[in-house]
Length: 293
Image 1: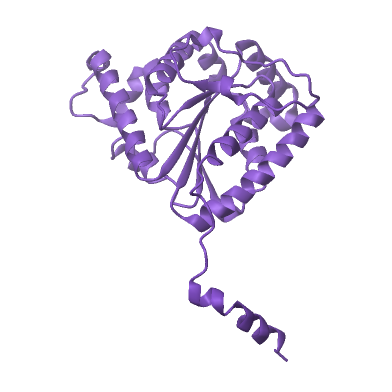
Image 2: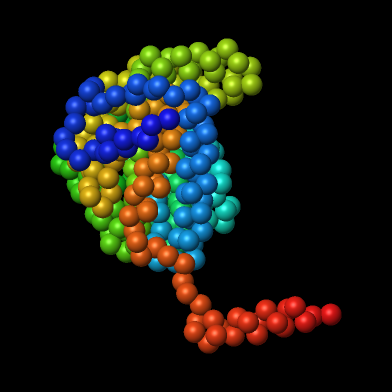
């Protein structure tokens, strides 16, 4: 199949979310897409080994999207060829009692990948600019000193939270974390079809919650929040990518391809060379091993 033009995914200027594609015209078959993904993820796995040996960068992969957008399966398929020690996945749920005793970014800070590793956030710190904006009452559970009721959660509050998240990303980027943020953009019609499949297949019923339908009714509010997030937090050091997610194989290939293409630009990510003294004695070490009885 033809090489992908991943540049169309980058959010590098103001966007209207209704104009962002949820599906790309695909001339390749599902089998062809999966074959290319297999090739790409192997190269990505090899690059991760080098990243681990190099030990100076961490990679943070952020996945956001509406329910059924395909985050879980994308993680499974894109990172399948990684050494298990090289990637850590965190799925952020409702904050625990302990997490609520800290600022809202604390649980994301402590989950950041170490240098040499990939960290994947399945849902991210952006939930704090998304779900909480759609449901402001959730903020009350953070027990903030200056918030006594939802009346205290005004535009100034959200502006400050945007500034905090931008500062969080700038700080970790300046300290060696390479940030990739992917918005898995699924259409409302495709979400409906996937929810119906969950209900039709007994082995998928466990994924369904009546709350999914309640959140679906708030679709337009969520899209407004997502648009604001894309426009206010896509930075050179922490870019957003719109990933058309109606076609799962294509979405997985796009994410893997973007990661590989962008990471290959870091020419300083190379395996460390052996100490000169050790290098000079390689032949001796070989001889020792060959002479073992």
